[in-house]
Length: 485
Picture: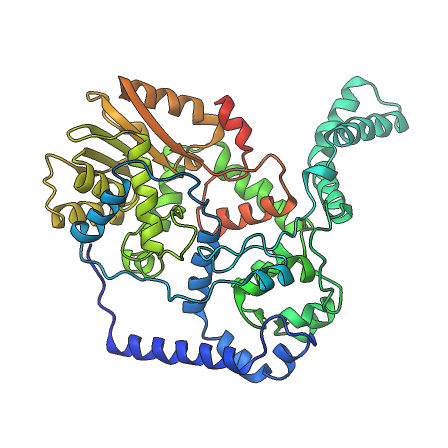
């Protein structure tokens, strides 16, 4: 699959870093320390040094966070999945699996002490059941009253009529929206107390580089998570230990208040990016992101080069990232009931991993579509290396709106690409897919969006993803709206 051979210098540096991380961990008490001080005070200098060299560790934890959210396979795999995965491992390519090192599964005692949601060996870092404020404390009725009554009151104060009232309503609409969201996000309580927070000071978890920031956020004066994320990207703050462990305790040291910077980004950047989705706009958003270099993505995506969640098939053991990705592709093919010789259109195919998997293991004729040049080259080379001829499967570099209409497909798949279509164009997009399907065809769709019981945190992380990961992707859309589309 076009592996990138690491240089000896890189391997030596990585080994040095890995050894340093493990040495640091063994020297430090288990996180979180009982006394609430040792992790920071006893190892401050070493912690600061390791934080400046933690790029590889951060990526590893980021993938771990992503995979924790993968849903457990609740039913036995249908016939063909296990054999397809095995065939893929043996015949698809000879990539070296980046198998996660095995670690002892959390004991029931540890799970009870930390109140984890599960002690399954399949999940190395189980989540803490600490929910944040959101929908339960948000009132659309109150928001509507604010948007209507304040302009009416202001108009009455200046003795204005209907036109003046409407004009004031338009002028005050955005300020009132922003003010309401900021106020409500700051005053909303946690929805439940299933998990008692340790109430440790902010500096127990994170270290600020400047004295001004230390003075601003310390003790129990928590930092907005959006502000922290921006400061972390800029190198102004560091974790005092394991990134994932500290992020699990984010409810203790951060808050999910809307800030002016966040509101400004949502209104003037995210809103513009997701409202129109013109051809030129999509091109400007996608290519600079995915054409950064395949070596950049292969470093943290691994040999499969898949950018969507994997699926756990065995809750009794820890599967590697590659196994979970193969599980995912096999399930997609099985749900589509893909058979030999059938045609599959994969819209937003990325590096063509599903196209290759379906071609090798199911004998399908796959057409993948992506806007990124580098993904197209990678995908076609990968197909040829697997012995799949171009007249069977290929990757095309084009806008989804330009997919030729002279061919109909037995099956269509769309995994995490609909967010780039945008909610306003989604109905038209699905109509296009319907027209591209054979009369007895089927389509597999995976989309991201806001859960029904949303939390303010969802909007904040969605904005972070839009800014730094998937530019132009609309991950703030309520999943219920996709049903309407």
